[in-house]
Image (cartoon, rainbow, N blue to C red; front, top):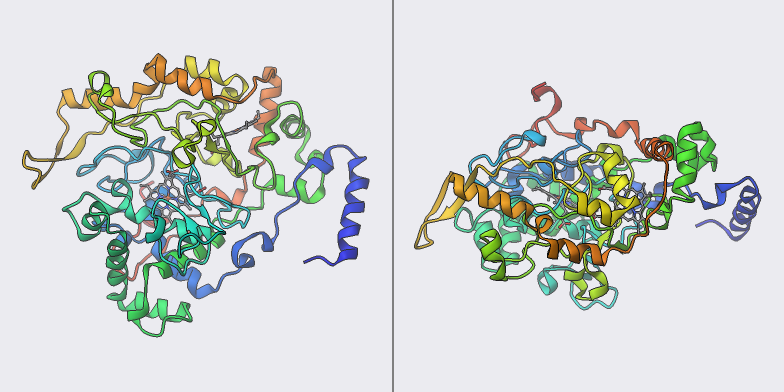
Length: 487
Ligand code: HEC
Ligand code: HEC
């Protein structure tokens, strides 16, 4: 906490800098206290979280890790618009539907840079996990798990880590293939978490690490999945902190000129006439609010309700449009709103948008300039085929892992493009849009992109050194550590 006289001095400095131009509009630079644990959680806990993050042991069928979708060499994403989760094989854009998947992951994997910053008020594209100061639930968080989410979670980020392991398409798998998946399918989340905690308890090196990392663990029997979640949060806070970009230099200097003429012009547009900072504000370049900017919807959507009228057109009887924040609040104002993403390292985090609809950063920015026109003219880049799927045999008791028949493959492809192909559904997205068109010349757009490039922290380009070479579980880390990777 700065003392009173110091605060007064800062205020005076701001007044003086305002005279020099834009400096007063620039956010303040990040510092340790902006992060959980003041940026320095205990080393033992961080190391434990690091192993867990890359260990497929946390997935029902032991075949996918957090790191598979949040690859530290790929902008902490998977390089795909919409990835393949459990059942998929390979990493990055070459990942395939492998031995069989139920479908695509319906949203773009979010980047994790600076995710340990205290200013985060919600998690996920739709913010469906958020603190609950009223204490309605024992966990202290609003979430899809409601009263089932246990207490003992250190932070919002720790609470987030309770969820990927419950998602059938991401980590848990299909019911019947493993006890975690079956517990999830039967709405027994607590059992799914305790099953995973049992697994960790049974591995001596993990058990010892938990005992060493947590004061409230005296013996392996005390390990709960919330401890794993707390360790994962500690690791992510340290591992993905990223505040060494040229932009950070400019923040410390309080002057965009620091970035060189082209990017400085772009920065002035960003904080000025282009209006970007209306939403991409603060040191992380997000207001943490939800806005509808008509990003096209590709992929299967979030299954927001059954609706048989979709069957004739798409061969599926659930709704395919992803209504974003609306599905959390049920406030019509929130239709098709998504959380403003942080733009830190944005040049590394493509494809962009909640559905990964844009595979070029320039196209993503251009979309903002006239969102509805862009939506109407949008053509989706091809998605990798869903080639092998898991289906149930007639009586439902036997699972089949098999190639998708060509006719069915066409139906899957039609589903991926259905919302964009439907004038009615596209019209709903357009109608919700709240972003005003902006006129920029091509030169100005180039300047703006040059500015976005200065948000790249060179140390973020490849953090694959984070991946452990060996794991306590004896499973192969995902993704593979650098020297084992094929070139
Ligand atoms: C199959 C891919 C996949 C796996 C595996 C996965 N994630 Fe994610 N992650 C995603 C996607 C997709 C989202 C966005 C989901 C949404 O908005 O509905 C996301 C969102 C997040 C967020 C929220 C970020 C934000 O800005 O709000 C965090 C944190 C995160 N994941 C951490 C983890 C951790 C920790 C694990 C392992 C326990 C994990 N993820 C496993 C794909 C994955
Ligand atoms: C009205 C608020 C708003 C304004 C103004 C705005 N954005 Fe965005 N921006 C968003 C939201 C919300 C998203 C995510 C939309 C989605 O995924 O559906 C986004 C996404 C992005 C992305 C993709 C990031 C990612 O990780 O996928 C980039 C790049 C971007 N904006 C840059 C800009 C630039 C440059 C400007 C100024 C020309 C700008 N934005 C103006 C709200 C805004």
